[in-house]
Image (tube, rainbow, N blue to C red; front, side, top):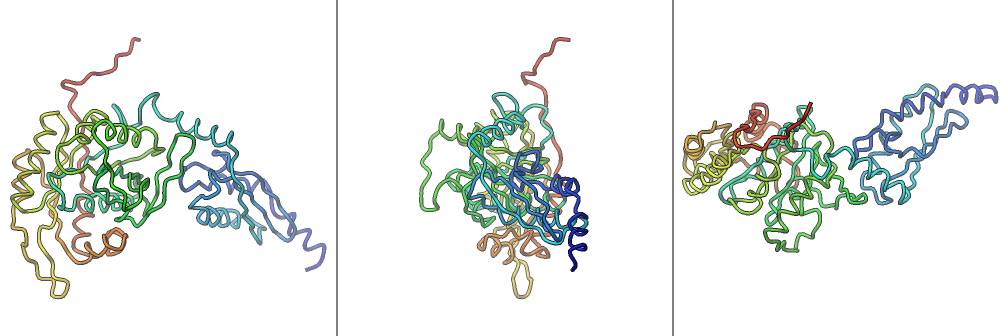
Amino acid sequence: MSLLSRRHAAADVDLAEVHLALALVEDPELHLPLDEAGMVEGVEVGRSGAVSVTIRLTTPSCPLKDTLARDVTEAVGSVAGVERVEVSFSAMTENERMQLASRLRGSSPEGGHRFGLGSATQVYAVASGKGGVGKSTVTANLAVALAQEGRRVGILDADVWGYSVPQLFGVRRAPVALKGIMLPVEAHGVALMSVGFLVSDEEPVVWRGPMLHKALEQFLSDVHWGELDTLLIDLPPGTGDITMSLLELVPDAALIAVTTPQVAAQTVAERVGRMARNFRMPVAGVVENMTELVCGSCQHSTALFGSGGGERLAEAIAAPLLGAVPLDIELREAGDVGVPAMVRAPHARSVAELRRIAATLPVVQRSLVGRSLPLSVV
């Protein structure tokens, strides 16, 4: 290429166009445009269509650095005349991190969280009477199914003693902390927060009532969830402290009760449903899990845990039966390897039913009877 041609190629790259392209790139954790988050440190247009971009990271150990580099390269590379994109990184100063944290916190209600009265986010509390009925598996796959429909979805893993969301999604890294604000860990299109991200797998969590309440409160208010369409809260089994705290902190949450067909599981799940009714918590419905065991070889089904538990529970708590999910090899293997079945085995029978349930989840709201409502003077 002649000197004149090289000069012509460099002149063809419009710096303003490069900045416009960068404005379309979002930080994968903040979900804010890079320039809006103050993350674009510099852009230089060099010779022969080379463009250098320097991005300020919220933390030097940003786990999604490669994703960010790929997105910036693709966006800038689409600008006319760009032949090569070089992405380098620096880290925000403490002052810059403080300003960003203040901005993120400023989008939440003063002294509270964004899931209170009048929130645009539909919150579902997924509960069961006892452990081992697949409540977390149902939660994880419903969340992924909703995300695949294009919704913005989060899971708050409130099962602090038996947390399993990190395993089900195959993520172990700690969330990024930004001056008092945590960024949820993202996997398969779902924003995740779990105490399992903050402790090692071998470390037992021995919190009592006040600490549990405070942890749930912080997971709601000190996590930058962004503008979610749906938040699923994976509750611990039973009617203990965390369930009581949820009723206080997120009064508009709707209950999804999970049971197996077995009488023992259905009976104890009734207590959770009746507790919700007593506190005027709306009940979205019942999911019967492990309805039948599907043979991986011949596809024959066996009612391993009996039948009718979901229907009996739905009738007892006056709620709809949302669906009945079979237990198949694909669902079990997905949980073991840490990839939701909705992603790993999209054609499995269990996945088809979970996808149908997600598509038909009712939008329910708590009655205003007995509630303290804010007053405004005109």
